[in-house]
Image (cartoon, rainbow, N blue to C red; front, side, top):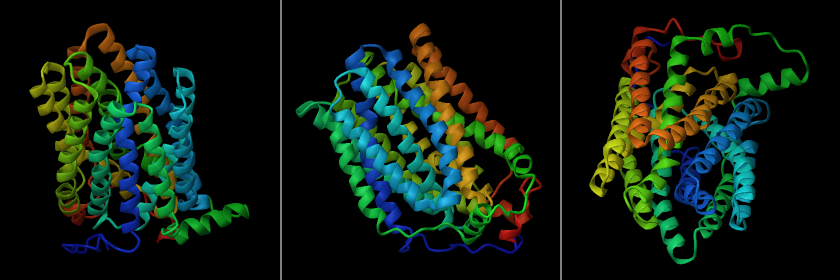
Length: 425
């Protein structure tokens, strides 16, 4: 079947299954966008220590490492919807608690717990989207999902900046809690999407009568393709969490002299750029393959890190935000699309959960590393080091990884693609 010509358009991207998902991602993006500004600024406000700000983000990544793989496994056992609801509820409760926090320690503990909820939500919704899509339309559906988030990201930081200047920074956390209530309300309209293969596999495990399927680890997680994807995912997280979400707000405030409202507007500006790029990138990904968007996107992301290293004025930061927005629109959803492409239907949650480890590792390890370099040697060394890693990872993906979609698939199945399990044959 893989040698048959693909349809030019593929399955529709707006259906009764996908539209509510787009709504939940908009609400999530609205809350996350607001916290992108408030979290590092609040931590810096109560500590005055940029390393403690980075430690907060790094510890949050540890929470995701714990929750992500477990969530992926449980989505295959229990279904996608229960984990989506649990993740949104947990994050909403912790941001409500952060509204009442007045020191670093309780804020830190709540953030750690809340990031488990974030990991539960992002992993389970990623698996859910994989269930309701095919390789022919997955890139575009993920792109619309990203656009829905980006619309929220555009408004979120601006709302956060306005709230911080008028009512105080802590009210941003209350606003984020309200967005999670929207998520929970919409979830009642979303049906369970776990494939029958995964349902049967879970039932067999309960009866302790399941056929052993050796070779998944060796045939997937140790392939050059998955290793290259893991490297790119690690680098993307390095830039997103270690630099953009942690150091950029403080760096632009302390070194460039921007206030909260100006920083919030620039973050929103980058989200607008990503929003405009996302859907055309999804079309490129479905038509020409995942690497056609991921490789140039990672190179542009590296260019934004270089520009951040050398920019000392407002215009330079605007240019950096422009490049970052372009790269975000190209890379953000494409890594998860690639992971979903590689996963057998009956173990999609497990594979996506393992893939999420590398996103979280990038946030945990590199956030502390980049913060240490920034503190000890300055922005030039820290941000150029990030740029070098991003460029190298792009080249590894370009030359090592096999394509999973687009015209390259017409050549036949990849030698690295794991054989389907009996349930999916």
